[in-house]
Image 1 (tube, rainbow, N blue to C red):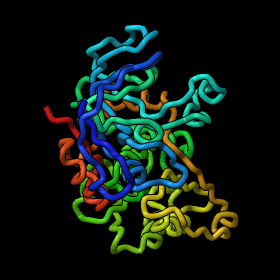
Image 2: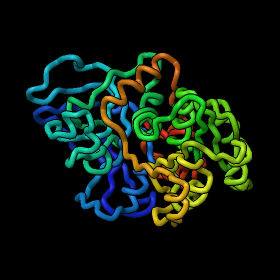
Image 3: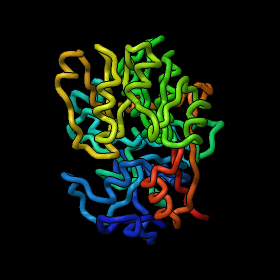
Image 4: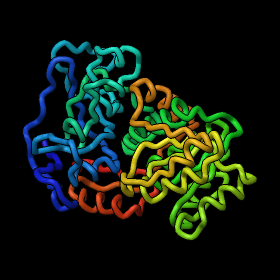
Amino acid sequence: MRAIVLREHGGPEVLRLEELPDPQPGPGQVRVRVQAVALNHLDLWVRRGMPGLKRPFPMILGSDVAGVLDALGPGVAPEPFAVGDEVVVSPGVSCGRCRQCLAGRDNLCPRYGILGEHLDGGYADYVVVPAANLLPAPKDLSPVERAAIPVTFETVWQMLVEKARVQPGETVLVHAAGSGVGAAAVQVAKLLGATVIATASTDEKLARARSLGADHLLDSKRTDLVAEVKRLTGRRGADVVVEHVGAATWEQSLLACAWGGRVVTCGATSGWDARTDLRQVFYRQLSILGSTMGSKSVLFQVLDLVAAGRLRPVVDRTYPFAEVQAAHRRLEDRAQFGKIVLVPQN
């Protein structure tokens, strides 16, 4: 098979298209022929090298996979999916046997891993995953659109529905609405009945954020974020702040949050070493909620809402495998709105 292989950490130039043996599914596993695989900031972090990540080379990135079920491993029943079915792959892998997994909190499993980080992912013609990670593909979407769903919507659903517990009538501040997480957060917050304040760095991104349902738009480069959020909320602040930018926005996020509000964070694309004034946290009784991914069951809800037209994946542009370096550079430059997707060449 063709695969984009990482044999050393570094810039986009370390990603190389190679020929590798086709992977074979083991017991309880299936092989999926990849139709499309979306990029995430996680891909950039793994490519550059992350503290604590000790996987041996070669590595294959890619967490967001849409494809066709190609082969069943030993012991895998030919239902509910049969060879030839189009599927979406849940990116989180867990043991399936521990207390957390059996309680439906598989992303808290001690052995939890993510495709493309802890095990080989979808930057290839084929990927092998546990049979339990397959979900039915929404019929009215292209493979590219399907690949733009899993990581961002699974992450945002846990952030806003399960962690922050957004209520109708609340105000949600969404940083970087042009990112995959941001574009999904605008939609989920509106679905929950919230008023959404969205930030972005260009007029084009702000206009697209409005098309997704954002009520108020703030230019992140030219606006005093805290002052504008206070103005828009009658000095109260946002009930919930969706944080995934990190060091560049963290202090503002705390100040823009209402007394008793919630800041929920899933990432730190601008840096993890953010300053926290603890007086803002304890005196104003803020809740800081950490969130990583979501349980496999979340994707069933998300895909139902996508099929019903109530949520929609946002695709920026596609690249063939051979142009993966350009795709990574676009994501690093934060030039995209929504998801960048790779597709295998025929």
